[in-house]
Length: 428
Ligand code: PLP
Image (cartoon, helix red, strand yellow):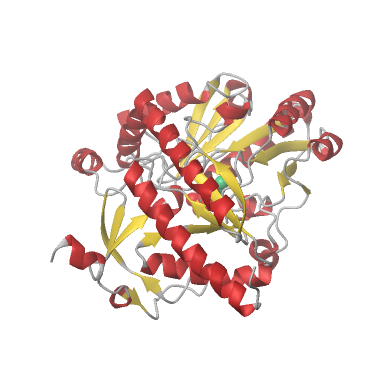
């Protein structure tokens, strides 16, 4: 079958109904078979341009023989040893992460705790912060501070600092003593941050909560007040880290100086791996056996992560990301000026958001339809928050692929715009 025929095959043949997963997932799912470059192929052979990267994970694209070779070679050598022992790939990646985190961490990074997911990386960060507060200031200094529309994960600790009623309400009581503040409100932060807090956890771009970007004023206030009270700042760079925003860490662009950094999504190019990077000041308070993991930082995931870090650290790679980001931004600006349904643009680098001028009720109906149609047209985009379309392509996307993806999105936005105008009888 030619590429052309495949691209036009209907996708319904690849949709499975009655998926045997719990009801927290959709019971109807498109089933993918393989990927190459920035394209995914469903099981009926139809091709999709992926502007979502498996939710900002597949930063180097699909079908990478170099990564497959690395993983296969390491699997032949050694797959698992437990965290009672070290392996060379894990040690090498830890060294690289310590070096990279030194560009932003307030103090020289000293240790990396590996995990398997973003949530686990944040759990570790919160636990280290509480250990530090307990051992340096005594009991009662365990409060956590987080921000509206932040997202830090689904495990109970990470969920406690993810103040979204839809995710939290069925599971209360969660951790107590969590302060929630509006994002980017420097005055509120100045007022609310007290020394009985162990940590502030924050994203540079709110990846799941609508793609708001941290302001420089807010970054400066965070740096100052956290240092003043010796409250640890955890920068959750799980979605923004490892080149996604055009620099290795997004914190670099705002001169944010956190005490702890958490990384995950693209770290091992789609294999499960996360990292929590801490300085000696914190590490010196932690005792043997106080935290741990079975699979985190195994030799296969870290061998692949080494390749990822090597690729992304190349200055030319990040130059290309910044160029693509500029192209994407220009195209999105055109959407903003030409489409009345586009209310604003959000995000940074190759993590971008298109806010739609829809009420929450309209968004609940219109956005799923828009995503479905875009998908039928062979382009995958994501949602972030209630009314923002998220674009987070593989960082290896080419100029013509950006062009094609955004042209398709534009066409579908225009369709929705026309339908809304018809329904409201508007003529403009
Ligand atoms: N933190 C941020 C910023 C995220 O975007 C996510 C996932 O979307 C997480 C934490 C949680 O990661 P995971 O789903 O791997 O537990």
